[in-house]
Amino acid sequence: MTAAGADLARLGVGLAAVGRPAYINTGSAAALPSDRSVPALRAQTAAVLDAAWAAGLRWVDVARSYGRAEEFLHDWLGTGEHPGLTVSSKWGYAYVGGWRRDAAVHEAKEHSLARFTAQLDETRALLAVDAYLVHSLTPDSPLLTDSPLQHALGELRDTGVRVGFSTSGPHQAETVERGLALAVDGVRLFDVVQSTWNAWEQSAGPALAAAHEDGVHVVVKEALANGRLVAELGDAAALAAVLAQPWADTVLLGAAGPEQLRSNLRCLDVTAPDVSGTAVDPGTYWSQRSELAWV
Image (cartoon, rainbow, N blue to C red; front, side, top):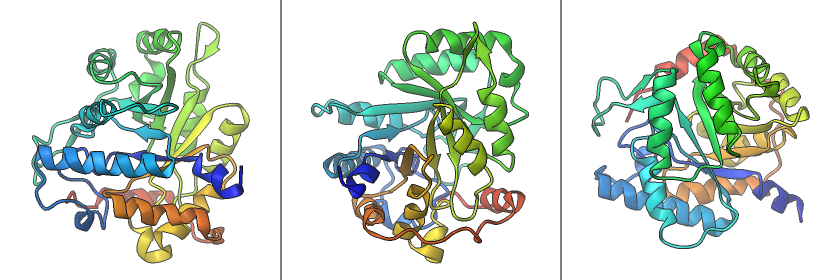
């Protein structure tokens, strides 16, 4: 396998931008249909998935809070055979936007046993997932001390589903370390971690490198800083910088349309830029991210 082929095998596609009528990715509006109806976004999701599959991407990431992304993925999977595809989803947030772009609140977070049980049933009604992740674990999450919830996750792990967590916020490194220290019945609970890492937000890098070295599958999300790095570096160079991290096992592309995805894939053909001096303070990064508008 060529170097480009090896990197292609490390790319996946996330459906956060196409499973609901609004998201915080800058630059995605032009790639989306002006009609944000359910049928229009179902077709848009299928077009993105078709392009990703044709390009050779074999990892798709969704979440219960991505509007109807699980449903759209279910529909697309029914259109043909997709051998070798890995499907990951996440629980913990619920979509509450009512399919409105101007909703006051789009997601509601709850890390509880009741939420896990309910959302696992909802996911299983649509998908056979390979990995199921806690959505946006943070150091203050009750999951970290909730033994019944941890044991329920351990039961899912014991069925063969890879159990993991995603992280967000300025304390990602601490969250990675604490989450990966959890064990149920003497076995590490989580073996997949999905974190934000990009040219501006590099704080989790050492913790993710240690996780990778310990056999945890590391997934990188928001490699383009929700689209903001496109103007700064260009999408291909920004993604190449992430692929240059040897601990990044899967790097998610969050394209809102097929052309955007094909542009992202140019990361396989460019030289990774030096981003050793581009990181900003994590608190500043996440504060600015929280101010992004849902469009």
